[in-house]
Image (cartoon, rainbow, N blue to C red):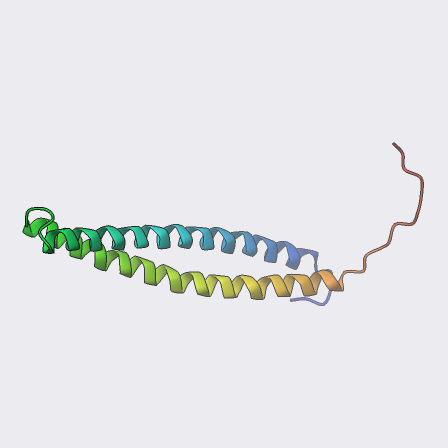
Length: 114
């Protein structure tokens, strides 16, 4: 970060904030997909094990795969979400500090043109 004009650095940080927002939104979508897959897998295992539907090894394997895969997707994206949220918070604080360094002028009272 330079001691000169902070406008370029603020623009860079705002671009980074937009990228982090998109990353967080993507993580939330994958977390939801993982939760749904784990739920479907658990239901499929339950109905297969307790005889609600006819036992089929393919359904059992599919249920286990959906359950385990759902947990894996859910967990990995949750940790990525936490990291991106932390980085977003730090970036927003840094941007606010740079904005605070800018010498802003107060526009005096004057007649409006409309």
